[in-house]
Image 1: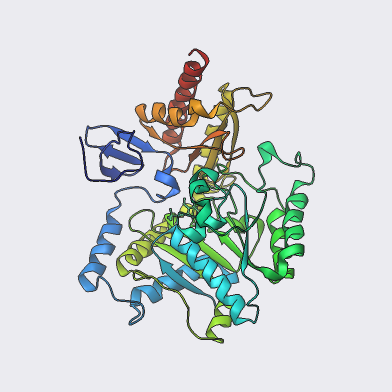
Image 2: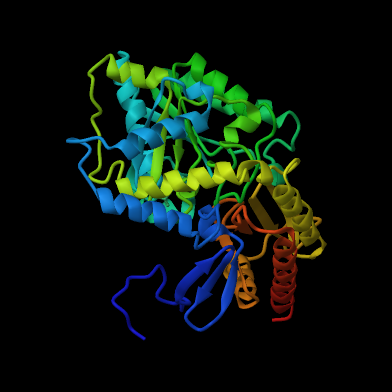
Length: 447
Ligand SMILES: Cc1ncc(COP(=O)(O)O)c(C=O)c1O
């Protein structure tokens, strides 16, 4: 049936989602799907939580919106303090800028970094350093620092080009995993030695998101990279749009490696999908430079600090705290995180699964046609997309991606279920996934 809605693909028929409850999404044909990817690592507290509806309704009754150039609101002030506290002592004296999603958060962070450098007398810092195989968003600034080739390629002629270093990827380590933490960090050092005086900020995903499928960096790499940035006067921006707000079993993923960024970007989990919300958390150094300098941000969106989104975010954070969800998700201590880790390892029994990696509830499953050689499937086979369809038919939603090896080659799935998922639900989802992988592997091996 033709609809006026511009969907992401003209070739795909989408189920019509009408209701969500807990880990389940229900469609108009009466099917239900276990949300094993949290849509795209968005939902953390589960679907259909009436407490969020109540908080949003309460805010709607009071005040729906004011413009941030004219007013502040009680909810914006309160929630900013709560988010700062959630970010921990490294952000004491800092400040939070609320936006409507991840791309806006990244744009804001990049502009904030540039303004910081101008305020501290470094106007020549007009470059940004980022990493290959990263994704930071769909807007132009965010795309320019992204390395996800498929999502960027046709827009490249419209974008500024910046320096990019490799992202650690243990399964296919560029350095054979021999002192790779030091070697990847040396790439940052070498680039900044050449361009350090021109560079405003280094942006990275602490745990890779969709593009590399939850690749976890080797210990010491992020500390070393952050130290190098500091030495060169370059701000450190952790893009925690996917990994933040508990997803990896810490409030923010950088805490796994005791790294204190200057700026954190977040979205997705902050409101768990109940409203469009993102945030940029800046430390005292950044805030002081601007407040004690020109005194105002050269940046803003109409929907900054939208009260309705903030009401959703505040209620979500209260639930994360009350239900102790971040601890539950921790891979070594928490019930849910441990179950996810253990159950997903079972997928390695499938002949087409080469690697299972991740932390907390952010996991990647990489497919190979030959385990020994780590050979990928031909991209034309659309292996991960077909596994995702086969899993959806069995009632499990996943997030399929292609291009983890070089932007073209390599198939994987991203898995990031809500933190309220039970061990039984995880086990059931892994059973379905395993059957879906074997089914598609059989199909491609017997054309
Ligand atoms: C690490 C990261 N940064 C930024 C974004 C962009 O966020 P949004 O899609 O909300 O604009 C994403 C989206 O997946 C992401 O994973």
